[in-house]
Length: 265
Length: 253
Image (cartoon, rainbow over all chains, first blue to last red; front, side, top):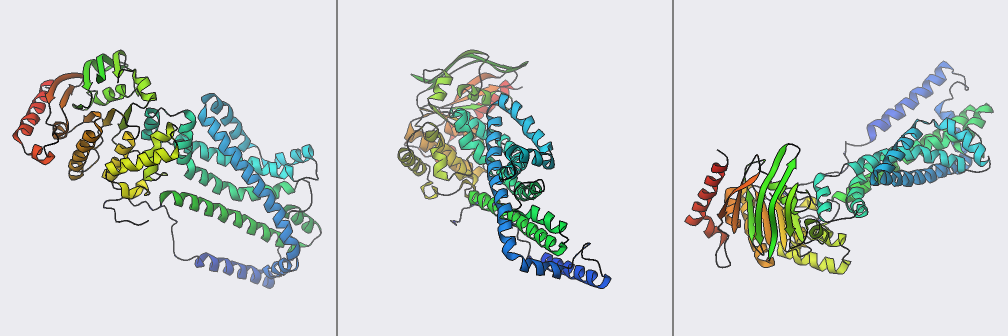
């Protein structure tokens, strides 16, 4: 809707368009070329560093394996991301709703952020058995919950005083206060939390695979290929991991943009 | 029947005497302005009536009820210096907010909100976002929102304080028309002497430390037959301004 409104405050929350995306792509291609050149000219042994061309060849050859493998790891990351997101928002709402709950929950969640996932993964695997994806998803959930909780809690605290006064004057219940003012006001913060958590979910999902469970994801494929001295193949799965991480990163970015933009236009 | 009844109201914040011995009555449909220098307690007084602040002592009745009951029943509408619209809601949804909080069904609150947007002259902007509106328009939306539960009393805390002079005069004319059409009583906090005089039946002059009422001057609120701009150029208007100014000086030597 465009209307000529005199003195209207134009709010531009749109993405910064900083020219085209070509310079970084060209830079990346240049780096790969340099890598290829160094490996060939210096005769770097394959176990130390395979050439990009050899890795690309393996990606092509293993594509039918890479795709379902990536889907398994990506699926775990997604399930954990959704679960951790819901849990993080719910806990932050609880913490903001009642002071007592806040004082109980906040330190526990923040302590969870100090737990290294490498410490959790083997324990979860023993708890749930090595034939299920649950331990990995749980690891991702823990990793995601923390940033979402922190971001949401911050967003819920940043209510404009005039909105607080208004809801008090309207005799709104605490729940109405949360639903009409706090939660919608916190949405940009929540989305930032989601964007930060999305790539972390992929990392957690891959790392969790190093500690047992079904050998069907990217993490387990990388270890087994490396153990079989198939270095170029290991790197092909690394490349797939990078692609998956980027996918989650951009998906998070996209969701954040879409949600925050639809609010201001 | 009085809309607001204040009897010996006192309010202390620690050692600070924000309000002392306040007696004030606002009749039904009456427009009363509170004016005074910063720190005279005029906003605190408004907040006591709105039940956003508890008096240290004294009696307060709003429409014959306790301020708390009046707040719960949405017997008053309130507008602040900032419009305070919820930017994630459309203009019409912002006007609906008080009814939404009170559990009025969607169809009823929507038709009421459209009616109010027509009253404040913003029906064309029902679906707009608050950020698309100018400051004056946002404040009109806030007034429409305050009127949503059809209150008999409107509490306004410097609602035009952030607006430029031209917009401000237009908004004053709008407010006079709205107050006449709704027949609601208005308790209006302001810094501006001409604003207080042109809007009010009575101008209540306050002085600080302790905040108390020093004088009450009759305002020049125009009736149905009189145009605001005529009032602004009348000699009665200027003599009322002088009277308020002298009352302010007297209370603040």
